[in-house]
Image (tube, rainbow, N blue to C red; front, side):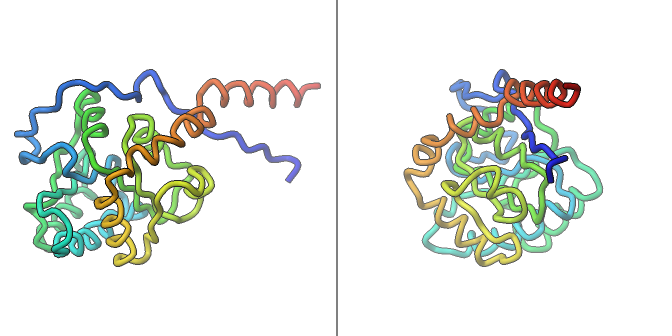
Length: 215
């Protein structure tokens, strides 16, 4: 429509950028190891499909070709939906392979982004997809749902999975876990993505739109 102008969100690069500090004391994270865990950060409302992620992760831990040290870390403030997800992890026998650290301070969160083998984002639908963009800004590889706006936002060169197919999600996680070059491969497109989704660009386009509307 001529009455609609698309302006994308931006990302705070003053906060989200690689820090390369010493690794966390992971004793409070069930002794997970840097480079040995998949990461999800955010709420776990039903449309985020974290229950599907847990079921797909069952396949991962049963696969003898995948390192049995791999964990799944799910970060977020505990609420009713988190309690439900934690209960499902216990029901599925994943309690020793899935870590729920609850709310994590920014300093620790940034280090989790840097130390994860991949950030997973299995949503059924999204309006934009800011969390994986923050992960990319931190230098973390990402594995994305192929649903709704995400392929448009992130383009064809990242790794995608079908959120409605748990086996496809498992196979996608296996691919990224066994891809020794995923970080350097995805980092090749990071500058282009971060330039496209900057607050300054969003502000300029919004200002120009207002100026054009009053001419």
